[in-house]
Length: 237
Image 1 (cartoon, rainbow, N blue to C red):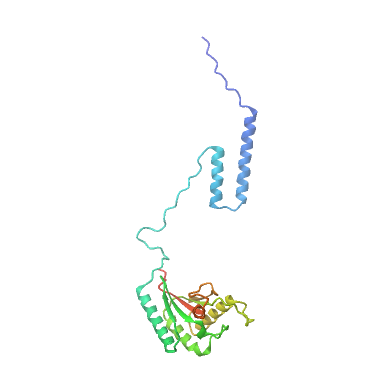
Image 2 (cartoon, rainbow, N blue to C red):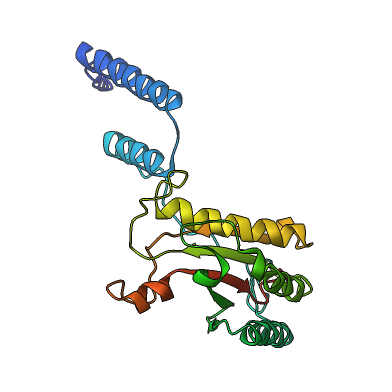
């Protein structure tokens, strides 16, 4: 009995060969475009999703990386206010307030989470519209500088104004200029008297951070101020 001949599979249509070549060329083209573009995580994931759709395979699954910080170990730059530093800053601020009180200048102390603000009235420190501190009160600013520089903590000098525009002082364009220049000049005096340059910064806020209504003379006087922001205990551990 003769063996049956195995049925030969019919050859694939020619269009299949052309189609596979076309798909390979398209894939190469997309890879080339992708390599020439700027790579971001979002673009890369979208590209992989396109490949998955075209080829019907799972290429990658996004996973969350493990946390680099082990339980019970503090991150290297976590900040912790130290109780003894709070005490030192409180004592320095109290001495500064006493010095201003003797000169009959009202000052305020504001405490926040990691900082203490020594709030000085600008009407005493500066003449109206001027950004150069009044020489009469320079000894008080020097006293504040001497008290703060021994704490070895960073500070920021902030200038604030009321909402009234400036008209009579052509060298100062607006309240932004006035608030910033006042802060800069106080900072320069601090540096002149030995405060470390790398621990002092300045900011001018014009009338954007009022502490009282600007519709009364008393409120505007409160808003014209110099804030000395003292950062307490923010040390790297």
